[in-house]
Structure formats: C-alpha cells, structure tokens
Length: 363
Image (tube, rainbow, N blue to C red; front, side):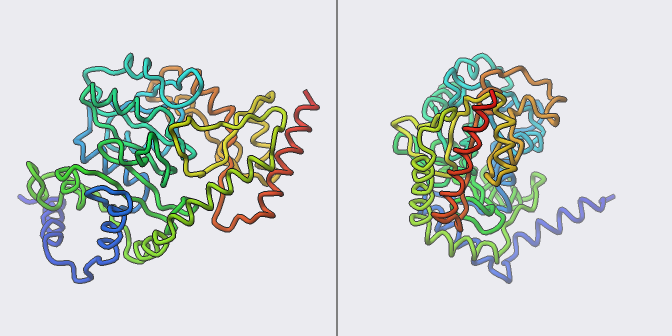
C-alpha cells in the first residue's frame, strides 16, 4: 500500500522534472552570474546561509555516524546545520594566537568517523584557511567553507568560499551583497552541483531522481532579482566596507585596552567587521556596555560565545576549548551597514573611546 508521504514524494519528483512554467529565470541568472563573479563552475542559490551549509553537508553524503570538525569560535547557526544533517559536530580549539583553528587539535580530533572540516570565516577573516585546506586534502576529508560573512575576502590570493570542496554564503541583510534573506553555494565539483541543485530530485551521477529525501531550499524569484541587482555593485560595496573598517580603526586610534586584530599579510579580509581584541577587565561586559550605548557588536548585541559553551550545545558533550573561549570573549567585532555614514563612524568611534576610557578608569 502506498503511503501518503510516498505519494507526495513521487508527485514532487514528477513536478520537478517538468518544465517550470515560471522559468525560475531570476534564480538561474543569479547562479550564472555568481559563478562568473567567483570564477567557479557552479553556483546554487538557496533560501539562507544556514540552508546552504545544510545542503552542502547533505550533498557530501554526510549524515548519521559522521563527524564534522569545526571551530569552537563560531556562530550557533553553523552548528545547527551540522546537527540538521544528523552528523556530530566536534569543536576544535583556536590556535595559540586566537586566530583560526589549531591544526594540532584538528589532527588530534580526527577519527575514522570524521568526514569533513568546516572552517568558519567570522567577521570576514580567513585565518589559517590554506593550512586547514592542506590538512583536509592530506586526510581525504571534505572542506566545507562557512563563508557567510566573507564575500570578497581572500587567503593567499584565493577567494573565500572557493578554496574547499564547497563554499557557503549568506545573502541576509547586512552582508556585503544581500537581498534581505537568502544564500548560495559555490563548487567546481560537477557531481555535487548536480546532486544538490534540486535537492536530489533531479538525476545526478550515482543518484537517480528522487533517490534521496530533500528539502525545499529554493530562493524566491523576487529575492533572486534583488540579489542580481545588488551583485552588480559588489566591487563598490566591497571597497566601501573596507574603507569603513579602515576609517573606524583610524578614528578609534590607540585607545588603551583595545588592540586591532590585524589580518595576516597573506589574507585580504572584506571589512565585514572592524575587529579588535579587548584587553580590559570583564571584556564581555564591556562589549555589552557598548551595545547599550549604541555600538552594535557580535558579543554584546548578539551574545556570541564559543560554541562549546553555548547552552544549546551541552547535549553534544563538547570538549573544552579554552583558547577559543578567550578569543570570543575578547572579540570586539563592529559590523557596518550600507547606510553607515561618516557621521555614524565618528559617533561609533567617540563612543568606543569614551567607554573604554571610563571602563579602564574603573579598574
């Protein structure tokens, strides 16, 4: 007897094989333009950055019993994508300088169940990406990049999101290029692109149509049209974001208790956030105080914390990652918006300087 779910699955598969009356021309055009801009064979538009990460993991056939290594210094959405694939996230500590993943910890936590490494380019930074990619290649592991905050960043001249097997991006508002909500994936792997383009509902090498369950993560046509419009201004938006970051660094200057988190010489971040290390007492409280004073930042406004310390991750039995915890607690990441003006930058800088001085005097 055919079940309702089987009937619906067969119906969806047959519809997917039919010509789309709407043509999905905007999404298809966006994919072609993204592939060209990033210099890759395939781009796949989806409904969010989290959807991009989940889709990438499923495309790599990662699921129950598999482990994915990812930095403890990450946002919770990255972890959610791994658990949505029913794989186990394994948190890796930060390097000694707090930048990127500690390769020794990566190697120590690689087991026979490890299938992928998932570096996360927080604040547009690609710290240690090339070394992690080399290790993934030597260990025969997928490298899935969370480049949701890294449109336009590069490491050793290679664009973020194109170094690994698959790169995942967000089009949410606030990103360098956005359309309100959405995401996309980049890959040069023909088989993976064919598989997850329609979430296993179209034929792919070794995977006949509808041979696996999938999700509807398609990007809506109006949002795709908006993304296409904004993509035309990528170079201009990228230059503006970098100029804003440099300008804010200059305005904040050598404020005691704050040290600019300068990128490695071989890296070129996109300026997604101006980034400092906070060397004041109670750094998380300081970031929260800045948020109250109108300086939106990752820790104070969005409560970013190392993933192994997040309440939602405690059932995963995470190992302690002390360097990652300290790096996140001391991170001051101030992001910008397209509408941020010179006057806004002066206000932000004045507030940061004032609050740091007051905080330091209260020690």
